[in-house]
Amino acid sequence: MKTRLCSALVLALFASTLPASPPVKATPQLDPTTVGASSHVSFGGVQYVNHGLVGVGVVPANARDGRGDTLGSFSSFKVDPATWRRNADGSFAGTLYVLPDRGYNVAGLVDYAARLQKFELVFTPDYGRKPVPPTQLSLAFKGTTPFTDFDGHLTTGLDPTSDTLGGRSPVPAHKGKLTVDAEGLALRRDGTFYVSEEYGCTIYHLDPSGKMLGLITPVPALLPKFTEASGFKGFTTDHGAKQAEVGGRRANQGLEGLDITPDGRYLVAMLQSATIQDTIGDKDFNRAYARLFVYDISQEATPAKPIEHYLVELPVVDGKGAGGPPDKTAAQSELVALSKDTFLVLARDSNGNGSGRADYHAGATKNGFANHPHTYKNVTLVSTVGATNLAGTKYETSYAPAVQGDVLAARPLRLAPVAGIVPARTTDFVNLLNVGQLARFGLNLNVLGASGAAAAKAAGHDVKGMDENSLSEKWEALTLVPCLDEAHPDDFFLLVGNDNDFITHDGMMVGKAYDGIITKPGAETVENHNRILVYRLTLPGYAARRR
Image (cartoon, rainbow, N blue to C red; front, side, top):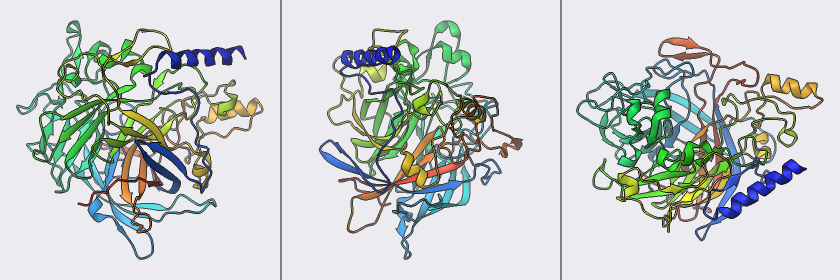
């Protein structure tokens, strides 16, 4: 009782001292909405409605792509709006373009060429309430398009060793190849597309064949800055470089979200979490203020500078869901632009299958005895209306911190934008952690590995461990398509995809077989299938783009 009271008092103090602080998610944020019911959110004077999960699709984790590599899954994806249609039988169909990241790299980075995967998608929504198998969405693989640089050379997933290639700078490069850790995808009406990546926070513009046409380099505030004594420079993510970085984008936390506004005029990109200079004390729970950039692409495909630049407030979580002070930031993994100033942003914890955190905790009675339960996975609504535009200011042209805090080593701490800066507004909308809706399609939130489930059983608790239908750690892809329902013209299907990190027992990567399943007690993983969840939403005012 004393421990719970102390935790409550600490959280109350945290909330009371930080009127502008990030929202705290200290316990598992489970959605109680029953199967068949809807939930509503009022945001910016608009009523948004989540009608719930209406379908699931699965691609086996050991599937191969057109280059013979394990397919990997959805760091980003987009449905080509020109192909979306309703069939005579009531099903829907279209072409889905899928972006994997940098290949299976648990045992080290590999020379994996960035690529785009093409699928033909068929979807039949299920609005019932009875349990059904997860077969509403099917994907037929149609081909792989590898990316090539301006001279026709393949890219690589290896760590950058320089920041100049072919006279272009600053770009991440490794021994004559552009280094690309692809994370965001946006489709243009002319058939070309954009890809954002993590190493250099670069946005590449590519033609339909995958050849690069141009690029948008990061603003100065995102360029990595290292201590002079370290000797590091460029975009390297070497372990020593991470320790020596004092400014710019955080390693492996680059431009994670990317989309084009429905009118086709603006390209929107967002960091996964805060810059180094905005992370007080370099603490994981202080990465809550990410940067969002808006580029005008109506006249020039690769403009030199953004026209808008904002702070976006992300939630902070207690990674153990135990009600204590926050120790993690729920980093964002994807965005969809509803307009130039309103977005859907996918933010999540780092727990679930694939995380390597599958340990048992005897005291976690409310969380199924899991030491790291699913805590927060949510598609939030974000609005920049009324927020401070940082474009062209010192917060963009230098490493001036846009965030302040006065406690460096302990939680909770004061964290807020500097005086005069108003961040974008956010609110939770589509909560993936709905036990009933997931269970209807055969999915579950189990996170205990085999050793943890055995320990729970030995202690007299009937707790199930992870299986192949357990929700994975990483959810990183969003795309919207219209329901084509004349009676409900504001209704859309939201597709949410996971990034399975190429985790399979039967993998193949750049010509070498691998087994990616972890069996170490407390860190177990299971076959991590490529999975898509489909929700039906009402989004008043959103006009789906037709190409």
